[in-house]
Every structure is written in C-alpha cells, then in structure tokens.
Image (tube, rainbow, N blue to C red; front, side):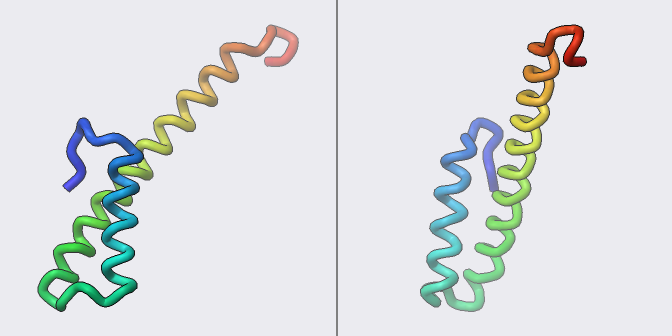
Length: 70
C-alpha cells in the first residue's frame, strides 16, 4: 500500500517493478492477486499526486496573469 509520505517517484518505481515481474511471469497465482491489488493502489496514489500537481500549476498560472489576460 502506498504510504502517505511516499513520493511519486518511489510509487512509480514500485509500480514499474510489479509490472516487470508480471510481464516476466515471475509471480505465481497467489502472488499475482496481491501484486495487482498493490499496483491498483499505487496507480490511484500516482493519479491523485498528478491531479494535485496539475491543479497547483493551473492556480499558479492563473495567479500570474495580468488583469488584461484574465
């Protein structure tokens, strides 16, 4: 599960490792289920991080506009 203090980069590395193990058939059926659940949580975590960053960037860009640009 993605920890609250985990960074986007750390989560992506964990997700890439899971995908690599799945693609190389390293996981047995018992491991596959738990790894897919973890991957799902990591994807959600990363998506939320990206969404928050996007919103912050939009806000900063909007605040930086002159009155004529608004």
